[in-house]
Amino acid sequence: MRKIVGIGETVLDIIFRNDKPQLATPGGSTFNSMISLGRSVGKKWPDTKILMVTETGDDHVGDIITDFMESNGVCTTAVTRNNGTQSHLSLAFLDANNDAQYQFYKDHSNASLQESKVSVCKFNSDDIVLFGSYFAINPKIRNYTSSLLRSAHNAGAILYYDVNFRRNHLSDLPDTIGNIEENCRLSDFVRGSAEDFGYLFGTSDPGTIYREHISKWCRNFICTCGPKPVHIFTPSMHLTFEAPQVETVSTIGAGDNFNAGFIFSLIEKDIRKEAVPALSPALWDDLVAKAGLFSANVCRSPYNYIDEDFWKSM
Image 1 (cartoon, rainbow, N blue to C red):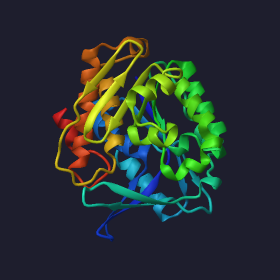
Image 2 (image 1 turned 90 degrees about the vertical axis):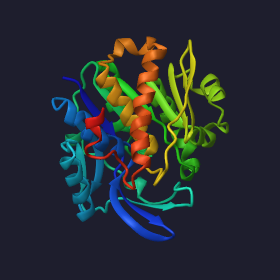
Image 3 (image 1 turned 120 degrees about the vertical axis):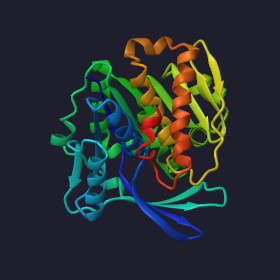
């Protein structure tokens, strides 16, 4: 049976509206996707193992995060609990449009993964690996993440890279651009928002991003831009799809759940590694449509992941 492996950070998100705290909930970009996959793939196809490679502190916040994973069908055997450390916090301030501005309380310089935890990941052909954000390029743990990604690639897994590059890491770019390039070279799909690439490459134009940057590393490029159309680029196609228009409660997790819906559809359609280079426009339509449904569900909610019963409508 195929499995889904997420590689990314965990945080406790504290969400503010009008400068008043409204909600505290476990989060992190890949984490949000994996919770939604646990609530959908894990319920609909329970034989599919869903596993998260991450780190957290050995504090009470770390307990909340790991308990939440387990209660949502995400295996925690590859979670490193670092002794004597505090878990990360993210403060999200919602504006009048319900878009979030973030302040992060993290110590990336002391990031650490335990070999005994990472080594539990044994990849097989057609497994799906989701990874991204600073966790996937952090030089402090790059020996672990690079080894995992190369092992997955060599085993014939499908790798999906969500770049998710934030403004606050611009000063780290000279030390991490090589890691970003390697991640793209190993991947079957690269996704990012126009905003991500504006920080990385100084342009938010999807066609320019693909032609001048992504195409030399990865065949399949997905560029999202909030409520604007989704752009798909392959060596032979440029497709655009309208994004669902919804009344938004919060945009936190919108992109993360686009990823989750896309991966849900890869499982649902039984798309294997060998089929990825030649996906038809009709299959791209199915994949992006399902991704949009997941994203829209989250935008209607104050939480970072799909509703627990959302999978029943799939």
